[in-house]
View 1: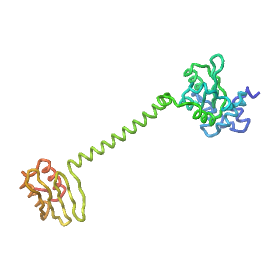
View 2: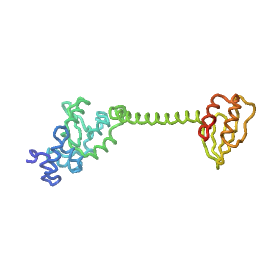
View 3: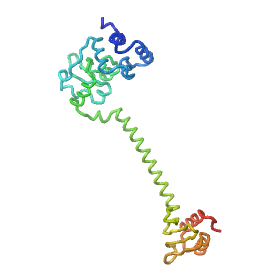
View 4: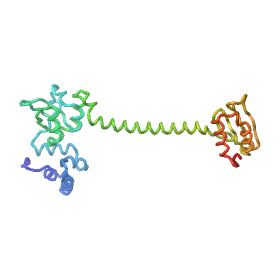
Length: 266
């Protein structure tokens, strides 16, 4: 009688999931290839072990003892990534090109199809617990190049690489912007009551009471400037008089500094 009962009917009979939730999951199942047990687990209505035990009863299939069932001769038959994807592990070779595979869901047609295409074997699915499968994969299956170079890893690596590239590009853009800004405008700082503009071997200091000073070396001048004026306007006039002593970059920058003050250079 049990073998003729559907999974949902068994779950309701054992009081694991009520009929209303079964019908809700069946509605979600329409139009897709997701199995009922998978949906119930994802919905938080059923545990892996509860599904496994119910499937064991429905299919009249015992849950395999992984330690006894695994034959080391099959350890290179399937890569780890494929086993983890389908919660499956190869157990032993059989007659007539059979491969016994321990599976969390032995009714998963997509998993069976992919495993058969990968191995060229006919899959004989048997029930196995999810934790046992995961432990056996780590313990018994060697890490291979297929586990490193496979679509799943490529997708993750591509996403990470894209994110890293975007962050590096953003960081480069910020650094480039700061470099251009510093090259053009220099740095601005405040020391006590004086605002200091620094660039191109020159320092302009604007004090709180309006006094303006120039320190540094004009590109075409002999010696260094260290002069204080009553205000920025007077300093601007001084710069105009000594215009030939400054490079084009210095002169343009000095003009920008004075434009930050009020009144501006005449």
